[in-house]
Length: 131
Image (cartoon, rainbow, N blue to C red; front, top):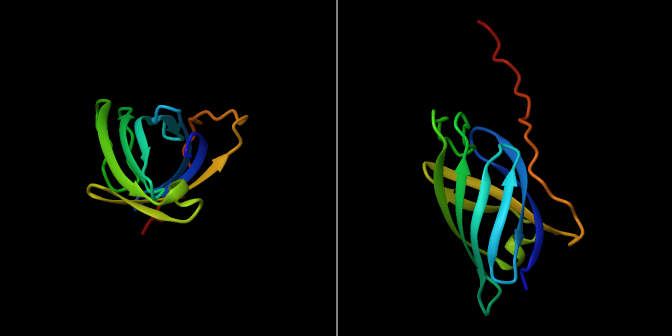
């Protein structure tokens, strides 16, 4: 059963990050990540344990997405649909199509007592060397 709390890390061509989500008894998903992106949607577990995940991401203005999308001047919404192995891969890398590229994620279940909240921090990037 997939009801519970999960932490994840992700990477794409532009950046890496981390976040969390919770799956309710009704299959509802809510979560967030370090880019202040919020996640709402559903997770449905099949008889074989594989999970159909449908998410709506609410993206703040000025956020560059890890898979290669440049920042937009206004908040916007993107949708992700994925078919994932049991327990969302249980820590093993999974690739999710996210036009114009892919995002690699690793998801692990955490304690139901965990207090998970998105952290509004961006990873430091070294400046490009001057010529």
